[in-house]
Length: 154
Length: 424
Image: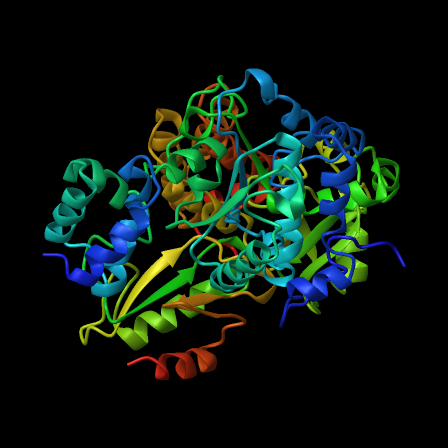
């Protein structure tokens, strides 16, 4: 069941658009922002509200890398693995993160604190290597800096 | 001091408010356009300016605009879409413009939309550009409050609605028809062309899609004229270019310079040269989907035609440096992994070909390669090209591969002969 607040937010997105499908990404994001991810049940609820089939909505949900169709941790780390970061030491950053959190890319730490995902070039190649945690960008990474960054998220 | 129209009023920490932007000469081009210029006069000016698209393909901007159907026999609404989905690996120029001077982007949008007689404009922004989203949202609200957007802009007969769309990932959204599908709330797969977006675009209506850096030039062309704009350049193409350098250089960064500046000037003068202990081996001149060039090309002008003559492309103009302590095979493997992951899966050469290339490169990098693998790689580079695919993603992926096989063949062979990566 969508909450009243989720329903209202999605209905606001539908104001003034001629076809509900246009708002499919925005609608999914409303639910993801409040629950962290899109469960099968949420997907069906959103599809019903948009009056499109769940399959149609799922084709969109599964296409976009930042719509999560599996549960994620309390914080999502998006690590840039594109070429400039790779040249500037991405491998050591990923290895260090993997060791500290006990996970590989695509996995969630046992305590449910972090999910680690790769992301396309973050557009800060002059400050590589880089990653994002939730909405925050971190650049010129070193292993020492990573320790400080992880401390901020519980 | 060379004029730097695009970046003169960039403020990374706190961009200009609408009032301060106006005080610095901002929005003068909107007043001039709406009061004194007919839409087709602006298009003619942009054509004459020799402005070419800065998003990677380099299509002449004025020509693209003129491909829209004439207003009197056109379906409505007409759309302008700004591609702010900067995701080409190694590219970090549009972020500067969006974060550092959002009003310049909005002014450019208004004038372009007026020239196209568009009714509605969308800025298509990638999710990760959080600061840009915040600053654009604020600047758009200021522009509406001050009658630069909405109905009857500045008392004229022209009206424009501007929306910010925040995307949800995937490199494919930067491809213009993939972007349109995504904006319509669908999977970002490419559409077959023709028809081109200028006639059948967003929701089937005439649509022009331009890159951020391309559009930010427009107010300056309108104010200063096309002759001035051509004069900024060292080449046949008009204007300045934001060149960038990343990799093992002393001062990585981005600088606005005359179009056609050489790679040597950008790398040595602006980026401070190579980091101590590293030597230059190659340059990817304009983002991941451009061919390597080498030290022998370092003095040629970084412009569309000059780079094409040496078998590469200008792309986005943001260079990635290959140094002598980085494995070229590993670098190409990294690039191809990116393209394979980002393939939308719509057409076979890309969906099947790119993962095969990744497996082959990985085998070579890990010491399990055979000499005939080089033929397999070459076969792909020769055959996955424009005309065999729906869009430019996979052909773009072949550019660094093809040129690496040309310039770094000896490195590939060493991996195979010694059964390991010599850099590890």
